[in-house]
Length: 223
Image (cartoon, rainbow, N blue to C red):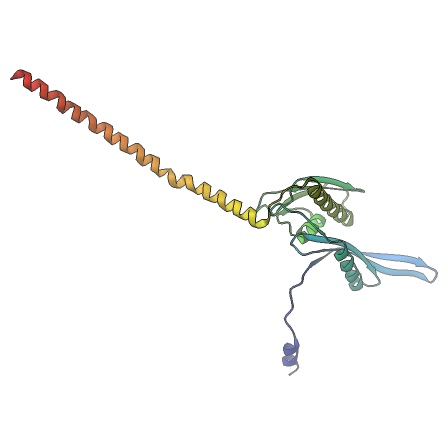
């Protein structure tokens, strides 16, 4: 009976608006008069996979409350990233402290070619195709902040230079048109071959008619 009541009381889980990812969990200690106070700091990345992403660091005595604080801070710092189809509009290399990150646009279908810290930020933002490289420190937190700052720089440059970008739907339509154009030559290639065969037949038939006309005057002279 208890199992039936539990199943009846359970509600279907609603899909979350934001995708939350834990990048790094570190243990922190603070010296006070009463002794050392232990705590945790959690680096969180939050995004809606539709062009918005944020990064936040939460500190608390336990991990769960630190995650909640990190999510709140990440939602406050969320930015909207301009995308050209499914990738970023142009390449960018940025250095923040000891971290150095390079981001490059990639053709559709190549996927996310990136390390763990960069992948967490890019995937949460909704970028499907990108290639990146970490050239500086291997610290996860530093690379996450550097990637977030690089995406901020891309947004500022796009707004400053008023660069025109394509949406995902426009990019998909352009690819469909390219595929249609690629299929057309294969269909029309058979037509020139048939047209080339027709003149050959006509050329072979002409000499026969010419010979017949040349023989008639010769017979008239003999008479």
